[in-house]
Amino acid sequence: MRDALGEVQSVLVLGGGSDIGQAVCLRLIQGRCRTVILAGRPEDGMDAVAQVLLAGGADKVEIVHWDCTDVDSHPKVIGDVFDQFGDIDLVYAPAGILGSQEAFEADPAFAAAAVQINFAGLVSASLVVAERFKAQGHGVLVLMSSVAGLRARKDNFVYGSTKAGLDAFAQGLGDSLVGTGIKVIVVRPGFVHTKMTTGMKAAPFSTTPENVAELLSSALANGHEVVWAPPILKYPFFIFRLLPRAVWRKVSERG
Image (cartoon, rainbow, N blue to C red):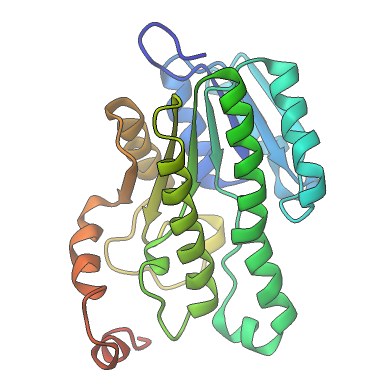
């Protein structure tokens, strides 16, 4: 459990090959976190992340097989982590895919798979985590939304809709857990420079995994429930959500 200073000592990463997940763990290791469990598929590159974290000061880094889309396995896989490692202070869930609107429109099955990965699978995993947190009496769950989910654009509405669903779910789950000792934090990044966005044109106010990690660390320390990365994005998106649809279509055109 969190130490006397309130710092995270153990973290489970659902999506263990994530660049942002790696940055978050490195930031936590700068504090008092010593146990990291990376959960994902063998092809996600978790071995390389584990080596970085061990070199960065982690005492223990374990890798477990977890498939976001195999929802029937979630209770056992996540339950086994809690049973083996005892209290888990933080579950960070960066699992997801970006894809492109063109690819989704060309292959509706791919669009459905994105919904499963970015939303349905994380709903399943989060509910399992919440029950385990209830049993131990504390814990923080962090879900990765996106500014793309705050108002879907015509050039990425499939991806945006998955993040819109996850954002709403995170807020509702967090509200339902008030008073239990469990907190849900939703992170709303803009464009983040990661391997997933390599080759893409950066959007205004783009950021880095390290900056997202720093902002999340601050939220953990200060008790914040929503993280904008970078924080300036909350101001334009407050306005964007109020625009009439005809105006939004013009504002959000490609290019």
